[in-house]
Image (cartoon, rainbow, N blue to C red; front, side, top):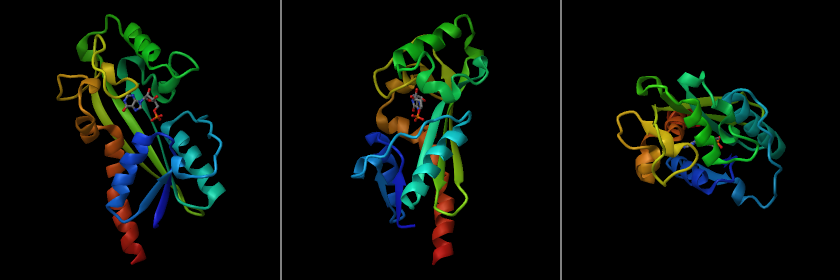
Length: 202
Ligand code: IMP
C-alpha cells in the first residue's frame, strides 16, 4: 500500500492522518486533494463501526483504492451512552455545537461529579478493494464539566475534562489535545497493522 485516501474534507483531520502515514512512506490523500467531487456518504449506521465502514467501503469500491474513514463521538455513562453516533446532531438536524452542549448540560443537571463519567470514541475503518475491512478503536476517558469553558477545539471540547486534567479539552492547546485524543489513540492502533502489512509485502 503506497497510497491511502482519507475520507474526510476536514483539513485538520487530513493533516493528522497525513503526518501519521508519512512515517511509513505511505502517501495519504484526502477528499480535498481529489479533483472529482464525490457525493457525501450518508451515516445511517447505528454504531461507529458501521458508519466508518459505510464511508470507507463505498468510496474504496467506487475508486478501487485503499480508503480510510473515521467516525467518532461522545458517550456519557449517565445518559446510557448518549449522544454516541448522534453526537453531531444531538440537539437537531443542523450540526450545532452550542445547542448540543446545552442539551447535555441540561440532561446532566443535578448529576454529581462522580457520575459524570464519559469518553470520546473514535473508530477507524480501512477498506481495500477485495479485502476484509480492518477496524481500530481509540478512547479518551474523562468527565463532563458543570459548565463550559475554553475556546479551542470543537464539538463537546468545552465541557469535556480529560482524566488527569483540571482543564476542559477546549482549554488545552492543539498539541496537548492531540497527545491524548481518541483519534490519535485510534490512529496509533494501526502502527502494528501497517508494520505487519509492510513485512508481509517485503
Ligand atoms: P466526527 O465523526 O469526527 O465527524 O464527529 C462527530 C461528532 O462527535 C462531532 O460533530 C462532535 O460533536 C463530536 N466529536 C468528535 N470528536 C470530537 C472531539 O475531538 N472533540 C469534541 N467533540 C468531538
